[in-house]
Image (cartoon, rainbow, N blue to C red; front, side, top):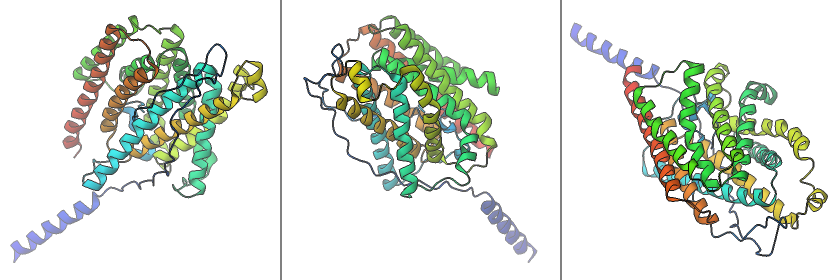
Length: 406
């Protein structure tokens, strides 16, 4: 009898321990209904500026944030684990979940490729990256408001103003990072900008060590060597190289990784009312209000038809079309990136981001036919291989740390 009671007590204790260990699961956001975007077709005679016509673009290959969340502290972008995503999601199984995840990755790549193509076409004929970035934030903010009004995604709890104040440091670096990226895309080839952005892991390790006290392991440091060497090799052979494009891309690396560090350092102190999608939407709206006055000071009212005509823009409708398409794709790829982040671990997201960069570089070379040298290709390949190795090392470190946490 005593043995039976003892066994029952042990079972009861085990059940109690299990029930106490259950962690809350973040609600999934319903994806915003995807709108079929027209393929980038250009009138071969249409010109934005006499000296910089927009050419007819070939069919775009399917493909591709920097994404913002503290959950991307593992990758970039991208896109960091935000206060709302402090709990790292487990990989989900099942045919339905796997199919959904595959579709989301495909949309992520597709929207990112489309964004880079539309954006580059726009910047060639309308070289005002600050104004273009502000317009992209405006469209993204309107889409976020529409998402809340139609209840496609539940609005964050609490006051919008309070939430905006709490994430304002992230909004500042998010604004600066995207602006610098657009400046780089306007100054050099798309493929070169993304090759430089492969250095994001280096800045992540450096800033985390300086401000968070996270000392990198030897394997992590070793994976940084091919990344740095590959970027140096590719840069010395880049035919479109300009210091403006190079330094602005490097600056975007610093700001995006600073965003990740800020997220880890400050966002965990919040109430956790912002999930990934609401966090991104709130930051997008704040970013527009931060950048719009600066765009007016730097560029003036260049987005007005009269101002475009005065600057020799021949087809204002084409400018508006390209600007709208790039803005929609800009918001869509980051939104989908967050939806993926709610379904997989940050390291898996980082690996997907590495593959995405390869797809974007390859598709931009095919679409724009920018000349590349053999040294440039080898350097890019080495850098991207280093990024993949970095992601794998981080994945292994995460698996090794999991049993210890238990």
